[in-house]
Image (cartoon, rainbow, N blue to C red; front, side, top):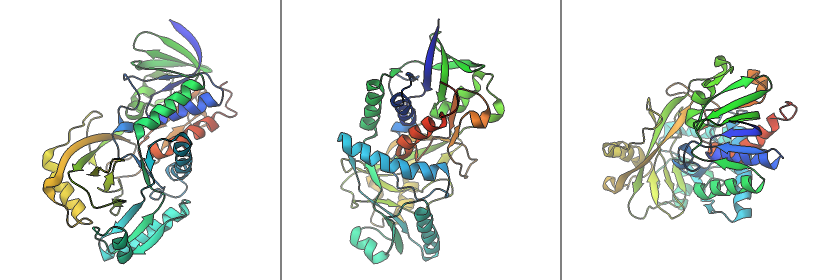
Length: 370
């Protein structure tokens, strides 16, 4: 059975939901396809649920631009709808004198990216804010917060449906074909959708999905590499109100302290390269690694209070230990009308989601797909 439709969005993670919502609000008839029985079951629900300020990313990168814009849009959206969140703030701490120069460079980068409320603070001021922290200097980020990602995604789905869009679950895309100005999308039950526009926002599976479409140029399909981030929960009342981050690594923001809206503390994520897309195991024996990493900024941490919690998988475009920007490719990049591909949609995808939705909608202006 083939059905002629306007727009198909593949993948109902937070980014896919935000894109589907934006396109529906722009007047398109949108069908959102998700292989699982509900939305946001992979990367979108296995993360720190942090609203990032936009500090860490190279100036001019999509991650920098969309994180800063997305954070502003997200706070407004959450306030207007009364959705659970907390502007809890963050300290990025240097625990060694040799890192102060790097901390100052990070502060300058954040300011360059448009995070204009950052402050370099002394160890004494950091201790006044968070008496249990150990550092020699810190960056205070007032714009950082935390969110209930499930309720946020549920709200995005509601917006999509209110705008006339439809979400279909247990609808796995198994392939398709580029046919001139339109794209055929085939699902596991044999349905074929003949679409004017297809947006591949399949997250962990985006490269595999792109490769399943006959006629899409393989040269424009990057390899997706997987990196696991493990979390350990903290039993007992944690001493921090703010989030505490160490100096970042080239490929991650380091093993840090975060909390949920109920006040439960946790450490993570770390980063483990070379895993599969469904490797969610958190080994209890990793407790020692987390303890040693966190002790640098939390000297009174008691190791026995750490317990293996959960893990998430990040779709990476960089090689092991490296960094890569979001890949958001429209017809101007790959030359295929009516197709937009999103690759490497990891952090700060949650914070950036509303801005990503607007960005994708903007790519369509003048493309002639509708």
